Length: 338
Image 1 (tube, rainbow, N blue to C red):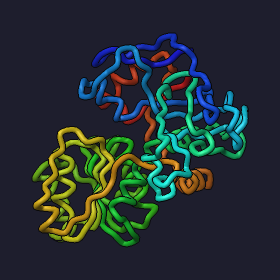
Image 2 (image 1 turned 60 degrees about the horizontal axis):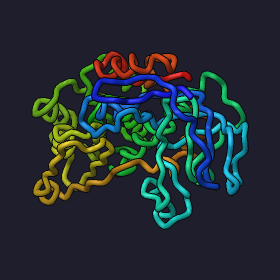
Image 3 (image 1 turned 90 degrees about the vertical axis):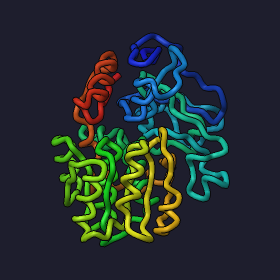
């Protein structure tokens, strides 16, 4: 099959690689209808994460079940499915406690930017749509494989509730989906921290009531001014850098909450600040399967349209250009068509 591979920082190629095959009786093979590039894919692209030369890359996809293992009971070839980037059995102790991303049989999509993907624990992971979806729904369904559940997880972890004031640190696809999540949850004041007009526009469409373009101390001061000097009830950290975490914690009121979903790189927590202000900090890898049924209903009912985060669509063969566009911030999120 054709798939996106990474060979070194900045070196993305589309090559012929072996087709994924059934290895365990709980596996399924999905023919990818649409995949995409994630902000977290930029960490290895920029040389911030280790790289296994020639490995496939891409963990987000939707598509049609091609083949199932002997123990798969709930899916059959021809089913259209959303593939969570983290696979789970949905029955172990971690899954039962809402931590499907820490499943004892955890697996990850590894060729979402390719023609086929293997899903371990298919029965526990996949979520079926009602037939083949309308083409207009494809971007939003694809967003459910990662970025929308991840933004939602940030809001859940931060404890967002109706009437709250919320700040979202990070204007990538996850941060924008965090804005959308806070809006659905009934937050009254939603502050998006963004310096880029196209992203600001989507944030406003998703429910942001304020936009703060400043960063660092100036950005924190602007958020404090919006909240009458008190700080927000909840902060969503959707970047993963030390500056983003410092900002999120710094603008949260005493006894507020911070939900973090940005993959941490060089983050040093100000434990004394958390201690003195009684700020709660929760988050981590999103348990996508936990949220998928509710989010799928929100998408299919037309209540949310997270697919707006895709502002560039390319054929799979042009995925290297997609990486360049996202790295250079010419695109928010790139949808790839095999």
